[in-house]
Image (cartoon, rainbow, N blue to C red; front, top):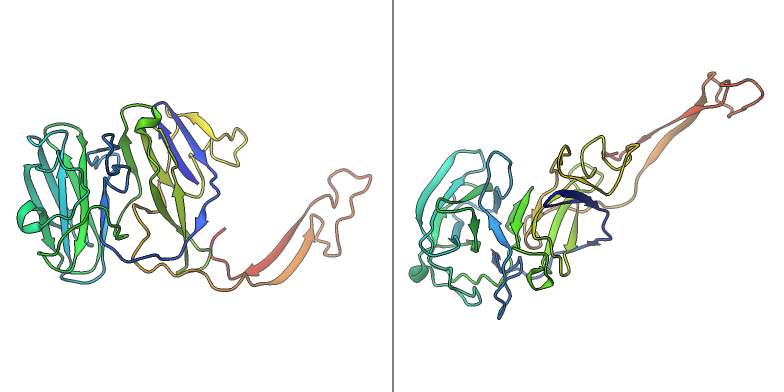
Amino acid sequence: MIVVSRLNRTFTIALLLLCLWPGSSVRAEGVWQMGLFEGSTHLQYLYETNTASGYNDFNVDILSPGEVINVHVCGLRDTDNIRVQILNATGVGVYDSTAVGTICGSDMNTAFDPSVTNPRQYVAASAGAHVVRLFNESGTYLSRYDVTVTGSANELIDPREESGRVWSLFWRFNASTYAVENSTSANLYVVADGGFTGTYFVWRLDLNNFAGFVYSLTANDLGVNSPNAVGDVVAGISVPTQNNSVAPKYPIYLSYPEKSYPRPVGGVNVSGLSFVDSEGEDSGISPGTTSNIQDSGTFSFSTDLTTS
C-alpha cells in the first residue's frame, strides 16, 4: 500500500505497480527526479527534515568505504541558511555544516563541477545507510536539492542522472496548488518484502501528473492504522488525517535502487496440510440440525513463506 496524506485527508492506494529490474547505472537524485524538468518553473518544494515526525529523513546507501556524499541544496532564496547533518550507519554524527544555499537560480539541467559549486561533501569511512538531514534555518522549504554519491571528491555531478542511493520512509512536499501545472509525474521505487527471508520486490510508483498540493508519501502493507485499516470493519481508502495515523515500513527511493535487493526464486512450499473441525473430527465439516456443532474448523499447514 502507498499511503498518501493530502492536507486533511489520508488515503491508501492499492496500486497496480510494476515489478522492476535494474536499469542503467548513473549517479544523482533530488529535485530533478521529483519534477523539475528542463524548461519548467514549478517545483515540488521539499519540507525540511522533521526529526520529531520523521519525514524527509534521507537515507543514503554507501556501498563502499571512501565513497563521497555530495549535497547541493538551497531554500527559497540563496540567502537562506541551510544546515546539513550526516549520521553514519551506526547513528553517529559525522558531519554538520550551516551555510547559505547558492543554487536557487539553477535549472539543475547541467553537470556541476564540485570545485566550482562547492557542495557539502563527506567522505564515508564505512559502508551502510547514512542519514542526511536538511534544515532551512531561514524558513521551512527547500526549492533545490540534490544528493549524489561519487567515488571521489572531484567527479562531475549531473542532477539529471539517477543513482538509486537516496530513500526515505516518509517523504513530504508542498507543490503550492492542486493545479496540473504544479503536478509531478515522478517515478518512485518502493522496496517491499519478497515473502521469503532475505528477498524483496521493487515496485515502481508512477505518480503521473499527481497534483497533491501539500502531501506526504509512505509505503506499508496495511494502509492507515486501525481502526480504519484495510480489512477492519470500518475500512475505507480515504479517512480524515485527524485522529488517524500511518506507520511507514518500506523504503521509497527516488530512483531504482543500486543496492542489491534479491528477488524470490521459485514458489511457496506447503506441507502437512490438515483440517480439524470444532468437535475434533478430521474427516470433514458436517453441519446439521444442531446449532454450532461441527459448523466450523481449522486448516493447518507448514510453509517456507516468512510473511503473512
